[in-house]
Length: 306
Image 1 (cartoon, helix red, strand yellow):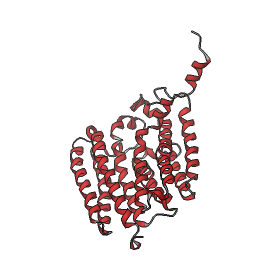
Image 2: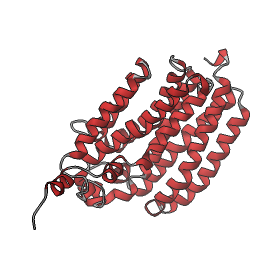
Image 3: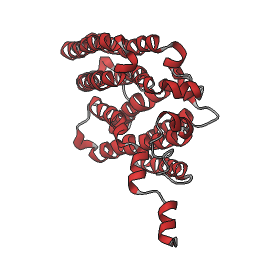
Image 4: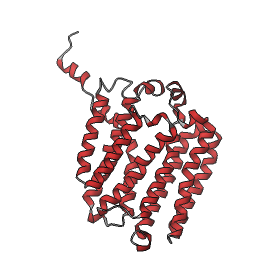
């Protein structure tokens, strides 16, 4: 059968659906949500920097997070062939080296957009890109160690967008309460990321990727994940109370209490219930983030808190 030039181009160029699958829109939510929390916690009215807020959400989600997904899928294509062979690269839907090319192009586009938001945001974006590439790419490949890799992603998905947003809205470094709360929720995200590791224990063991479930076993890793999620939220609740925000502190504490009840069920079968807890517990976690952001919106303008 004759092979036409059109057929060759179809094989050489990825389809739009393959590119979208590589960038994984479902993963964009956490950094976009964190950025929205940063916008709210800045205390600035949205009308003051509406364009900056929209560009920042675009930067945090589709651009930086999309870049990290492309980088991860390219450098994880061998382990994905074991754990998830239907993914876009091991399945062949993303031809040749296009996974790498898209990761590079997205990195350049992220820097271009970040440059429009000022030097501080540009530096933050560079830090985010460095973490994204360092997480998956050699020689660093932070993901080889669950403690280091999950910390890098938690900070880049939660802390960095939160702080970047507050910076973009004011043009200045955020006040201490915003920095502290953003950092705490980034630390807590370490536990959330551990939940994703329970589904790929076999492949990670074969590829010698030391996730927490591989290093410590499923039960111990589940306990660590729960503590990593719970302690920062408890700290945030205490800080909000200390900053004379009792209603916000109570709301965060109640959301945490519901999570703890869910954690008890999760601990009964960590491998079987990791996806369930991720769906239920993470929703409660990010709700607490927004509650804290609204609390900071009031507190951040109080001189004694700066």
